[in-house]
Image (tube, rainbow, N blue to C red):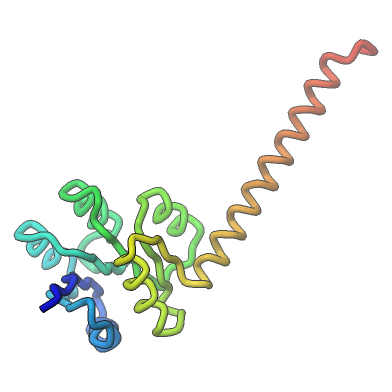
Length: 166
């Protein structure tokens, strides 16, 4: 018998937990080992054992999902972490990127996206749902434009300061 990857699922909405559990039941390589609605419950489980994949919401009522990510990384720096969130704010996206999560799906995405994320992470490949990737690309493009604009401004200042005509 093939061993299944065990998942810890953390979301403060029971309806979301139930829906994700139903989606994951269709993926033969995985099993939801535990599903909890609070960070405190998750901390207790994480302290007791390791999971193959962690699917987390960042907006939990009793602690920050970012704290939970950092705690998991302290215990296992190679932990495979998937974030399923409703947040599309720039600072959330930047922080998730800096924390090096393995996959991100937005709750506004199609339900198939969570399955795609799990399958991708099982293969060792990072994954972002199309909507998150679009936002990330816009941020990257905006950052590049700001950087190029700053380079042009600094270049002009340098040229005007060092101009032999001044």
